[in-house]
Image 1 (tube, helix red, strand yellow):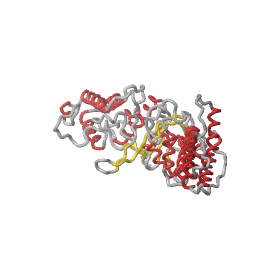
Image 2 (cartoon, one colour):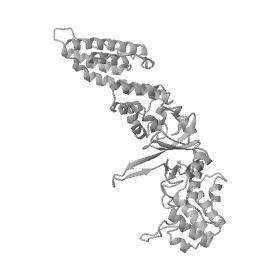
Image 3 (cartoon, one colour):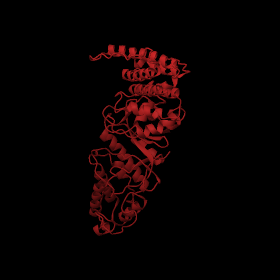
Length: 441
C-alpha cells in the first residue's frame, strides 16, 4: 500500500486480535515492517500448530537488487503469508499470541502517519528521525489508538489546527488555547515545543516551539537554509520565553530570547569602554568613574548598588553624573558610544531615536531608554538577518508576541506586552544587544 492510500476512509470493525492484526497489516505500507511482522507471525504459527500439520513457510527472498515492483510483490506476498498464518494461530486457540505483533504494527502505523504528517507540512521532508520522535510522543499519550491515528491524519492534511496568518495579523495571542481543544494534541503540545528542537538537519539548530508551529499551523513552514519559521512566506525568528526549575535551588525562573545573531555585535564590555571614554571626554573625572568600577573592577572592592548600568538604580547613578558634569550633547555622545559598542555594523541614522530619547535636561529615563534600546536591537537584528518578524513565544503558557515594524515593537514595549527580564549589566557579556525578552500578556 502506498502512502497516499493510507488515508482512504476504511472502517475496521476489529472485534478480536485476529481482526485487528489483519487491519493493521492492511494499513502498514513499509515492506521492511511487513517482513518483520510476517516473520514473527509465522514463527508464532509454527509454534502453535501440531507437528504433523503443514507449517506456514516464509516467502523466498530474491537475492538481486530489489526494484519498486519487486518490493511491492514481496509486500503483498508477505501479507498473504501473514494472513494465512494468523488464521492458523486463531484455529489453534491461542489468539492472544498476536498481541505482541499488534503492538509492533501499531507503532509502525503511527510512525508511517508521522512521516506523512511531517512530509506534508515541511518542504524539507523528514530529517533527523523526526518521524520517530513525533510518533513516540503521540504513542505515549493516554489516548486510544484510533485517537492517535486521527491526530496524525489531521496533521498530515496540512490544513493546520490554526491559521498561521493570524500570527501576522494579531500582535499578541495564545496558541495553547487552540491546542487545548484538540484531542491528543492537548496532551503533547508542550512536549512538542520543548523536545522537537536542536540540530536535526534542517539548517542551524531549531529552537523551542519552531517544529510545533510548523507542524500545527496552516501556512507555516521552516526556512530552507536558516532557523526561521516561515508564515505565509514571511520570515519569523522565534525566541522562546520559557520557565525552568533550577537544579541547585529548586526554584522556578524564566528565561527569554536575546536579540542578536552571530556577527555584527560587540559586547557589554565594549559598550562600557566606549561609554567610559565618552564620559571622561565630556567632563566626568576618571577618579569618579573609578568609584563605580569603571573602566575595570578591582577584586574585594564594594561598589555602589546598581553601578552604572541600565537598571533602575544604575540609571539614577548615571543621571547624578550627567547632571553634575555633562550637558545634553555630552550625554547623547555617551549613548552613541554605547550603541556603537553593541552594534558594530549599524547603518547611519538607525540609532537616532535612542539618542534623541535623552531628556532636555541631559538625563535619561530608564524605561524609555530600555524601550528604545530593544526597539533598536530589533531593527538591527532584522537588518543583519533579513527576517521580517520576531516572535517571543512563551513555551509554558502558549502566549506569544509578534514584533513587526518599529512602531509595533515600540507600542508593545510601552504597553508592557513584552518586557526585558532585567536591566543591562555592562559587565555581563551575555547581554550583547539586549537583555532577555519575556512575554507579559
